Image (cartoon, rainbow, N blue to C red):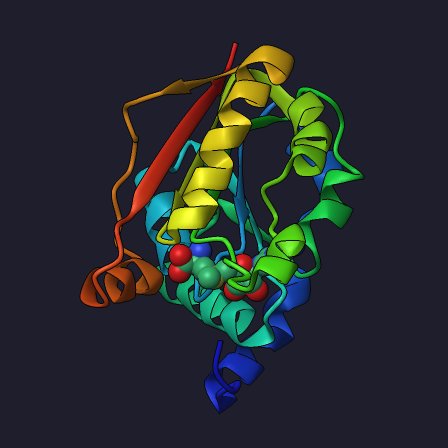
Length: 197
Ligand SMILES: C[S@@+](CC[C@H](N)C(=O)[O-])C[C@H]1O[C@@H](n2cnc3c(N)ncnc32)[C@H](O)[C@@H]1O
């Protein structure tokens, strides 16, 4: 994320209006969108699925300012924002709460010694799994081959331990900035969809 612009900064004045309040979200179809970047995918997804509520999480203020700009511009009413590490919010969620999780282009932490910082790991799945409703889905997309390999290796743990089955049928296509950059730089995009049995 780049430097914060004046418009993004001004939009942050509205952050309190949009903050996620878990207790207000019971009995809704909830999508957890982790690391929304500049929020373009999140806004388009929320617009395409107005019956769902998106909990959009990001730590970068410039990105949060951008998403608030999109929410205000397009009068989007089905997004709330969590502006800290998503795992802190997950700690507060009740069991069987989430219908979907979207993780588009998670930070790759390219150096081998930093791979342990990657979000998608066994520990993360231990935290996430109880929060998923039956038939919930997790959608992950990465353009880093060794991150895709790491996720493929987790596939066995997912199916045997967490009963998350790899499935097809991606429900919504949208090319984020990271997606377009990966194509331009010749990196393959790997998409994963897991469904909780
Ligand atoms: C490579 S960017 C991808 C952004 C966006 N999903 C896209 O495809 O354009 C990854 C984003 O995840 C955010 N992020 C990383 N770890 C996070 C965490 N634990 N909680 C919330 N956001 C996180 C980062 O701040 C970063 O903006």
